[in-house]
Image (cartoon, rainbow, N blue to C red; front, side, top):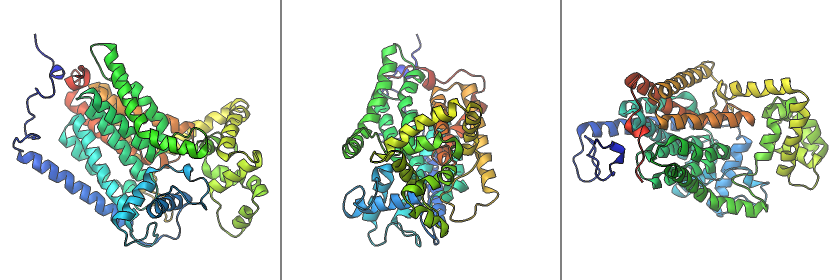
Length: 472
């Protein structure tokens, strides 16, 4: 009886032509492929570093916080300083990256808005690394040509290039999620411990962008459903390994953050503010709308905010929301107060004005994916940029859907499910164009691979790697 390829031990499988890991010769095509990927990553690095040149009038609130946290880690090894209010509002991976960049290049200041300092260089390096990760995802799914096509698109994708000039967490979040996607696709052809590695990479993505946590917690369930096995326990074991890897990576930070706040803090303390803004109908579920509508109430507690507004300055959303929380729950933790207020918003607006609330939620989907994001708007957005973004997103989406429908590849379906889950969860919260920036790399990889798989495999049966049991 014929033996399924996936039932053969990885050590017994015949070597793949052109590859070498144990002393075998490497073909010229493999060398050319590696060279092409390297060139694309260098192009991505150069474009992003070039975009980072030039002066900035000022940093946004989030940029200032990430840079300040990175500087504190670099200088004192502490997360935040006594003069910083609620440093745990921001996820730790980007400040840690900035601190590392400062140690590697101590001759230039962090957060310099006038020159391309070490933190901007780090953003460019992350952009180049994301191109390599995207190549790996698409190549494992549909071959090297799909990988090269996906890497080329991301390397020159204008919003991703311009985003590298910011001091935000989106570049690292996109890289971490692409790396997690690569780990998941890679795990399907290996032993159970690979799923633990993939889960650990998901944990890293959550430390870069806390809003990915809800979607990441659904991935172990998706792994158990997407992988096949000779008995149900195998699926559960792979899902459990993914969850274990996720929790192991998150645990040290969760313990630290929770000990600082004296309550459970999985990654950040910003969930209350996000939930409140997302359910605040007068502000149409947007941060800008909430700022405008809540400023008078915030000025009751902090009159300086209105004085700043009259002078032409724009108070930060964080300052306004903290003041509102102090007004509605004096003496209580602002994040807890805003979380309680979000629950009240569901009854106040969701139940009493269901049609208006429903329109607000529907509009969030277009607001999330219909526009491009390349960082704080310190310069005008070119008119063509949103259309380039929409075109790339639409083509990638169609390719991903076609690939899932025609090839029925479970790895591709799992990546599509992750993107859908992240989108829906963002729509439930504050769906801004900023949220798509960290999902676009995986979408480009999945869309390119899906298009190639749909054309090449057509109505054929799923490949062995996608449908056969994974060896333990």
